[in-house]
Each structure stands twice: as C-alpha cells, then as structure tokens.
Amino acid sequence: MVGINASANSYILSNLRQINSDIATTQARIGTGRKVNSSSDNAIAWKTAQTIKSDQSAQEKLSTGIAQVKGRADAATAAIDTAITLAGKIKELADGVVAADPGTGNYGTVTAKVAALHTQIASVLSAAGFDGKNFLTDTAAAQAVTIGINSGVAATVSVTTVDVEAGAATTFSGIAAISDTATAATLSTAADTFIASVTAYQGTLATFSESLAIQQDFQSALSGIRSAALSSLLDADLTEESAKITALQTQQQLAYQALAITNSSAQNVLRLFQ
Picture 1 (cartoon, rainbow, N blue to C red):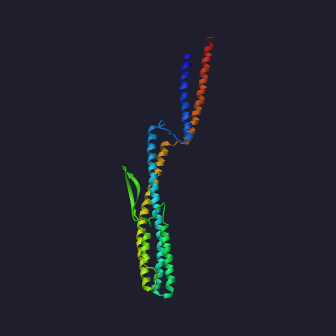
Picture 2: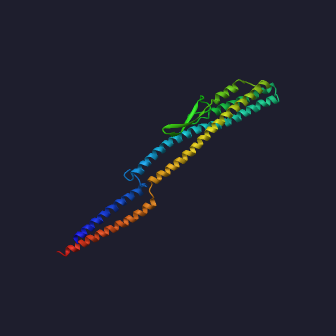
C-alpha cells in the first residue's frame, strides 16, 4: 500500500511540475504578448521571423529612398506650375504691347513689371529644393532611386533633371527692356519657349512621380503582409492564453489536493503498524 502511495505521489509530482512549467510559459506569453520569445520556444518560427524582420529593415530603407526622391519630383512639379503662371503673365504683358502699343512713355512700366515677374520665377525655382536636392536648379544629371533588390542586384528607376533656373535666365536675360513692339514680340516668343520647355519637363517629372507612387503602394502592401506574417508566427492569442492559464491553475489546485490526499493516506497506513 505504501509502495502504491509512493508511486501515486511520484505521478502527481511529475504532473505538477509539468503544470507549473506550463503556467510559467503561459504567463510569459501573456506578459510579452508573444508565443515565441526565443528560438527555444520554436526554432523554425523564430528563424523565419528573423528573416522577415531583416526583409522589413531593408524594405524600410527602400521606402525612405523612394519617398525622398518622390518628394523632390513633386516639389519641382509644384514649382513649375507657379513658374508657368508667372511666365504666362510676362507673355500677357508683352502681347499687350504688341496688340496696342502704349507708347514710349509706358515701356518703362511694362519693363519693370516683367523684371519683377522674372525675379519671382527665379525665386520659385530656387525654392523648390527638397531634402538637400533641387530638381530645377541642380546640374542636369540622372537621378536614380532603388525600388527593389532582385537576387542581390538593385532595381532602379531614374529621371534626368534639367537646370530650369539656368534655362529661365538664358531665355529672358537677352531682353533687357521693352523698347518697342518688336522687343515685346521677342519677349512673348521667349515666354512661349520657356513655358513649352518646362511643361515638357513637368510631364516627365509627373510620370516619374506616379511610378514612384505605385512603388510606394506596393511597398505598403508588402509591409502589411510581412507584419501579418510576423504576428502569426510570434504573437500570442491573449484570449486563448488567459483561458488556458485559468484551466492550468485549476489543474494545479487539484494536483495539490491529490498530493495532500495521498500523503494523508500513507500516514494512515503507517499508523496501522505502530
């Protein structure tokens, strides 16, 4: 009988140790919000999660670069809108002189207005910088941005910038003043040339920006997929874990009670031999 009780105690203690271990594991999951906190919890899930995290880190760098270059293109596009409006006003003034010659005494007023508008164009173009780069004033060059890595090779898209500020200076600098309808006509043509050239460049920048926006949407979707995968691999179901710990605590109490009963029974048997 005593041997049976000893065997029962051993069985109960073994179960109790397992229950206590399960309680500690469940409490850790509730405390951290994760079911996998290290490779010892689930080696495969942990390794997969680390790979996903590495991919996320690389993706964040790509997304930052895309946002940076897209911002530069968008700033340039907005500045060109304003520059076109100002150049249009210059053309209106020039065409007004051609259509109805205001006379020598009024040329100076028109010239001053044109000069002020030209100054505004230069100011707008120079203010179009974004994060240290200006796609309207920097020396013409291909501006590339990495949008992905394929088998270790960077996939890029690019746009060739144009020094619009220098172009504007060249276009209008030859017309120092309106002195007659002929110079006014020349200025009107110069304004047309400037508007046509920057409109074409604006279209290029807009197309480039749209392509980057598509990449941003893709990167956002990819980030959501990776985050969901990480959550599935690592995150604990707190509702499930809370219910589990309640059940384990009940089992723990029953195990202690069973242990007390077997100990009491053993003592009662021993009294028979006293």
